[in-house]
Image (spheres, rainbow, N blue to C red):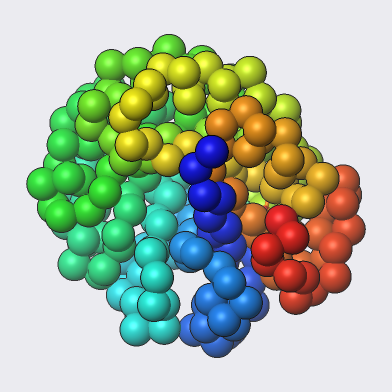
Length: 217
Ligand code: DX5
Ligand code: ZN
């Protein structure tokens, strides 16, 4: 089994103290910092963009994992590269030319990821497996933190099978808690995004105290 990485989502952090929040979770053992970029169009919420990634960069020692919930993606790729993103993930549903987008992300010096909404089948990414370092399986409909986990174990198993011996992370995003993480890791996921479970009181499924031990997720 691949080593499991935990990527706290700063969407659930204190918006007035992002630098300190990132330093704190890295000190507790976070592997990556997950940054949720929303445009009020692809998803019904607004968050932050490249200047935010740039401002956080000096506060984050590890990987900055940037999840774009925006459409279109291509006009913003260079700005996220300049800002210091390490992984840039675009949704397969965000536009008609996902190959071009993933190739442009690689060409800009970042590691490309592709994300799938809960209703999108695994087959939607079959033809881009040679272009990506990461597949993000959404286990909530994107747009908000703190939602309940939608089971996706079958899709995860199918994607791990499709990936074969390629070195591809399978990341789970949405409703990840100590109760939901064992099933997804057993199915083949190796990166767990966790917002509420790390920064807030857990979720409806699994209330957890602020500051929980990240390794327990
Ligand atoms: C949802 C975001 C997630 C979100 C996860 O659109 O992509 O990264 O922050 O939050 P929790 O862990 O609270 O479900
Ligand atoms: Zn996310």
